[in-house]
Image 1 (cartoon, rainbow, N blue to C red):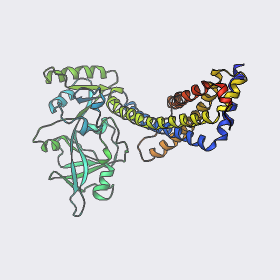
Image 2: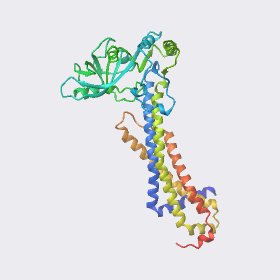
Image 3: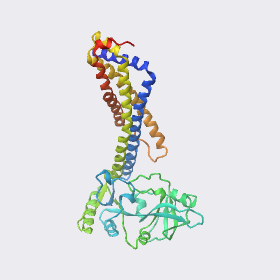
Image 4: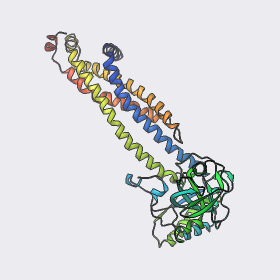
Length: 412
């Protein structure tokens, strides 16, 4: 009996919605826009988080990074995912790097000293290019797996006045990605290009450096720009094996505490922890954008309520007839609520499909793909059902409360 009633409600809802095609279509479209917005945001947000996680997985499990300050816990700390934003002041020193490098079980260690500014080709007529300068050691190539396209990486710590540049920076400065032997200036110092990196297209990574637009110089060269003072934004550490990594982390932690007078103003991260600050930032951004997109769902829900209230007013006599032949209040509620749910579910399906199409189109200009998961589908459908129920319930209850005698007195 229950299944027959459900089928009857669906059939009645179909005929009712079909009789007002344009209003129904516009209402469905309102819900679809809201669901599409949320689907696009969630799929792209999940894609960028997965991108960083995959980079960590590809490191082999024997990598740790040392960063200044404590790992951020709140949304306010994630205002900028780039190195220059997160680490405005650093407590890590060259002494810390040397001590970590000497820890038993460490295969290699590389500091990242970041300098912001503009670089300019020594050729006349070229415009300065905004860039990030990373002062480091030769070990960075091995630890970060930086691919060399032409030339070589910086080969000694004291190899001053030479640089390895990203492929896009090479194009920006010299008009070509084959720039071995070319020179550029940074803060009045001339550097010779000895290597060009392959195009990487991963501006979002655990190093928080877009290597396509970066110039890499020796640590000694970097010290010259800060009057010999080294402020290191990150130290990458590679253990000789995965099994030795816990010992390396424990020993390095004790050594750094000793260097910093037992003040825990640094963090040593490994595994998924390395990606956590970047992932948390994008998750926070995704959450905020989802809340904003939900406003359009409220508009879609108001559209459902509006068309349902109009339907109740237009079908007052029909309600009276149904009650006269024995329909209960709950039957009337379900009749109108079914119409609301059908519109919202159709809007949810349309919005879910459209959201992924939009996400795929946007991802063509991004270094990552949207993520496809059943969780996003469940969220989209749950939102659609929720909107249909919340905004369709009041008109349904209002219809059920109509007096059958008064309703029958009204004519079309």
